[in-house]
Length: 324
Image 1: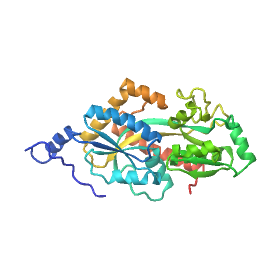
Image 2: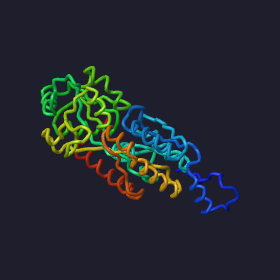
Image 3: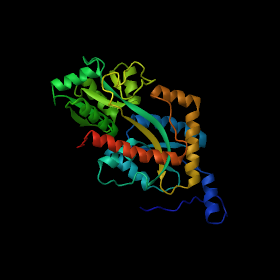
Image 4: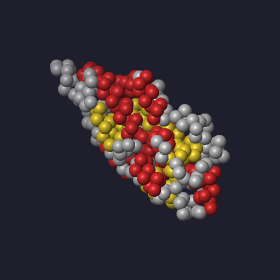
């Protein structure tokens, strides 16, 4: 894959080579930074990306521009960043979809989740919540399972991302039920169909789920964790709901194109951590579904990514998930 050398003409008559590269990266960023997100506006990653992007812009004194490239299960966005100039001005903020789920779904990818990127830091961790309409007669996860067993194949569920689709398919496999999947470009785009009755249920991230539950539009039947979520304290866990094996979560993280100078990767990592430690930012994220979760180092995030590829692969194989 084509990789152009990192060069920014900002330091006058410095000699070529490592000293110049170090000096150039030390003044990064001197221009706007593009934060590419593989989801449309309103998706969970987009919501949190705009919050952190605003704080990073303040730290850097440079604009952080959100570049939404939704669709295609994140393939176009990830490939775009993988092929971008490795100068620190194009960064990917993505979910488990592009870097952990896609490798087990596609035989061939237009990018390699590790070889084509410099992992920077994990950003967040999100369990899923099973949702129905607030006025639905379905009050519990057991109610949903009973309905789907009584009327096999007559009900639909929606998902606007591969992790949400996998979570929904995992529920179907564990519960032994049938339901027809309907695909959307993002989870929020499915909400009107859930409210109209076209969809019977969804299994989505707790960021978007909480907004709908708190808004009184939807009911949470269970969160896919061992312990109750602080953001959704009234929603039982899948264990409490009688399905303890239904444990699954997704995450978000930052990646730069392969070849981005080490100094920029380290500064980006440190500035993300600094931004996430801001009390106002932490409070904002807690209202969205949980506090930020950062990696201790880029190397830790690289190891995490490798482990997540294996974890999602096991989930997909164990649940015998086949996506159309």
